[in-house]
Length: 312
Ligand code: UDP
Ligand code: MG
Image: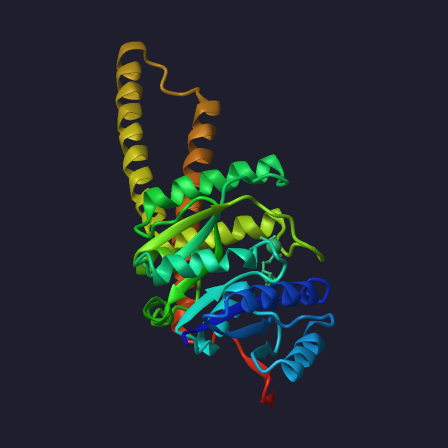
């Protein structure tokens, strides 16, 4: 019988976990043509998440868990889950039931019968989301698809079911700065997109503020595109051209009308503008340098403190 691993990153999900477990076991029961394994990753939760996982693992042999030594972020959680998963197929989904487990049979069918390597989900509406957030999200997807060669779909969730080959491809990308949406797109393979209507989380609170999402999107751009670096050179050329035109204007004006002094305000504007452009460009190079610095340290992406087999 083929085995499906379900990877679930959890951070402070004590309220949602029991509901999630109930729902996923119900769906697993319906899919009696496959064996299941549930890999929960406790991302350094400060609430009762870990005790719940210990209890579930004790009463259900299919439940396994990895508990981190501290909060390493969702990306680290997904990596740990994918590494721990042993199934022929691996699905990743959130613990808050915003990724409906009821879609699993459809995803599984796409991979086993329709010849896809992966079935991924995207939500069709952004209802219940602040308009400003939706606006910036749309902008981000437009921008990153233009400037990177990873195909990143608007509204794509991290809820997907993959064949082993694709999971191994993802695990072969050993980068420290992980941006899953980009990694999924970068490895390629045949992906079927399954749309569904956005659902609110069942319990608990979202861990993403607008600011966190903004920083996350910058990470994505830096990880999957070098276009901002080219922007610096392009800006440089444009400013040089403008300067050249300006020199000619000043020369002609001085020769024709005299009076080379005056124009203090315009001078200030030019100096401030150029200063700004230079700082911006240094900042962009700095971002890439910082990421390179972090990559070269080869630090582990996460540290494990406990698994279902006991404290490490
Ligand atoms: N999560 C995690 N580590 C973190 C933040 C979130 O493992 O540092 C998990 C969280 O428990 C949930 C999933 O990532 O299962 C998505 O988080 P959330 O629902 O808060 O994000 P949203 O759906 O609002 O984008
Ligand atoms: Mg959520």
